[in-house]
Each structure stands twice: as C-alpha cells, then as structure tokens.
Image 1 (cartoon, rainbow, N blue to C red):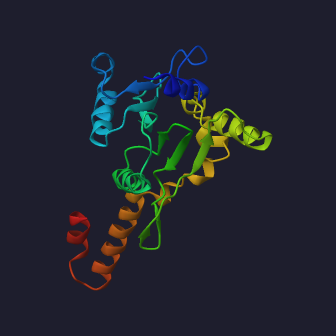
Image 2: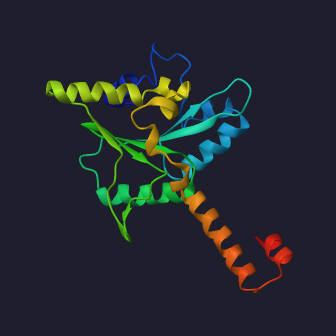
Image 3: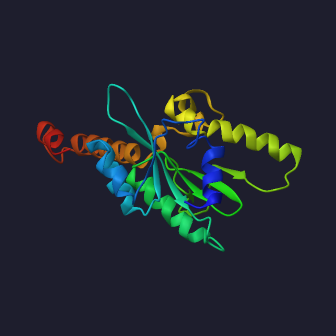
Length: 209
C-alpha cells in the first residue's frame, strides 16, 4: 500500500487508530484470507474475479460478515479510462456482489452505486454517485462538502450501519433498482402471463418458476 492510498483510507477511517477493528481486507494477501471466516473467504474470492484490491466488510457478533464495498487502487496510474469504469460498473451492477465500489485515483475518490445501472435508456454512461476531492488547495465550500462525504462514507458508518439509515446517500440505494430485483419482477410477470394465457397449468408453471 503506497502512502497516498494509506492517506485516503485513514481519511475515510477504514484503517488507523480511529478504526482498530476495521473491516478492510486485502484481496491478494493470503495471511488475511487464511484467518478469515468461510463467508469472508467466499466474498474475497468473488472480489478477485472483479479484480478488486480490497473488500470492506461489515462484521457482526452473531451472524456472518457482509461485503459492503470493493476498493480499487488507481493511485499509481497516470490516467483512468472512463469506459473501463463504465464496464466495471455494469459488471458489478449485474453481479449483485456489493452495494458500491470505490475508485482511488491520484487526486480523488470516486464512488459508484452498484444498485443503479450506469445507463441513460439503452446507452451506458459514466455515472458516479459521489466524488471526494483530495488536493492540497481546495475552496472552503469544497472542503465543507468533502468533510460531509468523508463522514458519510467512513468505515465507521459501514461498521455500525448508520450509512444505510441516515447518511445523505442512504435513499440512493433502493433494492428495487438492483439487477436481482428487476429479474425477480420479470420472472413474476412472466409467470402471470403464462397462467393468464393458459400456456401451462397453474401448478406446473409455479413449480418451473
């Protein structure tokens, strides 16, 4: 981990003294994987399929951990291709693996909502949820906005679940917009059509679905 990424993660309270029980796990570090629960190992293996560098988990005392974020380190890249991010957003939207992913660049943190398809009609578009600017000199207004975003997207807000309950972005994550829910709706509608049009007997159609 380079110094810039470390600074970003500390600012987001995902590592460091402010969060000694962080849910941040490196995808390629075998020592973390060996000591992880079965649920976390599966989640880490899934993250590796999408080339994530880290996974941030919410951990519970009485039930399995839940992957919250995939994190991608682009801090050493000279540039970043928006088309690459659009395609990644599309893949993660379709996979339903995590609610969001973070892209760390040389100058900012770009946050994407995996419950929302990156499209305008049938056209795929670049559609970040939020951007946190990290620069030496920022206006007081941007600094104020950044402080709110850093608090909303902090590791602690995912650790205790407050992000989903009362952050400025909680209403942006509607399960009804997810690929899984859309597929479920289409299957239910197909079942209704099959029954109404007498294509198959009611009981048989329901068993198939």
